[in-house]
Length: 457
Ligand SMILES: Nc1ncnc2c1ncn2[C@@H]1O[C@H](COP(=O)(O)OP(=O)(O)OP(=O)(O)O)[C@@H](O)[C@H]1O
Image (cartoon, rainbow, N blue to C red; front, side):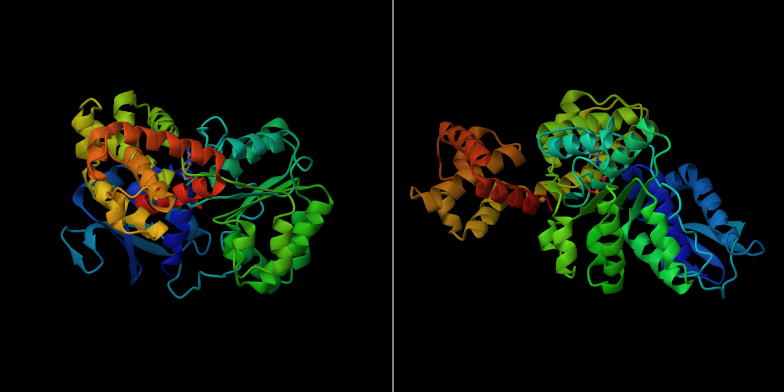
């Protein structure tokens, strides 16, 4: 057995826990496997206590099930420690559960815990708990139409977005909606890695025809993270055949990727063209109001009441492009509030999110915004403060002012001051102008999004 068993366990828990809980508590654990012992290292005592209290039982049960699937007569020890792999502070807690034979291969094992032959739909991801905003309303409207008429309206549908903007959530939401409308329909969600792995196993076991038949029998196939196919020629060929026969038979296919179909490198031209045959829709990073709504919704899901001013406080500071960061923030706040028994106030939030906010504030100073925008438009930083009014300089300056307004806490007069002592009305005018330009001019809208992304990383 190898560390793969822990990875499989993590992959399962990732589907079950909220992304915030997963990335706050489980992702930071470092694992080490040696001599039939799985050691999990948490970065600090606080995380260790939380993991022990909330997740240890689940982790053990999960590992036990995985191990039993291979061999019922083995045992493994699980230790939860504070520290990193080679420098621990605490005495370990040792717990024993049955496990696999150490010499037994895990990867590619024909007994591997394949999930291809079930829907894999995660019930918690629905349209109801997907917060709508300008950044995603087109994607929501389209997927809802598909849910009502799978196979008929937009086929295939291609959703693309940066990580953490809700592609997976929407895929499950469509799947759940189709099944709830028609419980007999066969809908399958599958990650591309799993599709490839199942295909390899089928080739190895001489069951590729059954593999193809299985996909031919579905009403809807939801394939996540299609960029994973890059460079995997044989898998692309099988995907291409599967895809073609499904589209010909009006079976719904929805695919997601982190980029526009034509931009996925390492994918055969025929396949890329086919991806683009239906509709390709982006999901953009959530704007301020949507971030606020997401924070409030995620808090409600934990039974927490997040006051509006606190939600705005967080959303203005965490101008992220990955919603998991917002979920992580809520997980931290929730833990802090539970531990201390305090109400959720801005001061509690400042305390709970100290590190997160510090990292973020460092990046979103007006100076940094000016630097990043100047570099983007290849103008001098000094032109951010100069009196020059030619458009090549004035436009980027206005964009930088609008970004400063959106991403920092500075007032209009303070921003004006930072841009060569300009009046606050000039800043206000710049913000309005940029808003108008973003609506009317796609290039500016794209530039603006790229800049926000750069400044949020
Ligand atoms: N608009 C939204 N409303 C509510 N939750 C959201 C929204 N957007 C994203 N999320 C949440 O953020 C987390 C990450 O979303 P998801 O896994 O769907 O992203 P993704 O685009 O598939 O990311 P990746 O490319 O890394 O797989 C999920 O828990 C999801 O519920």
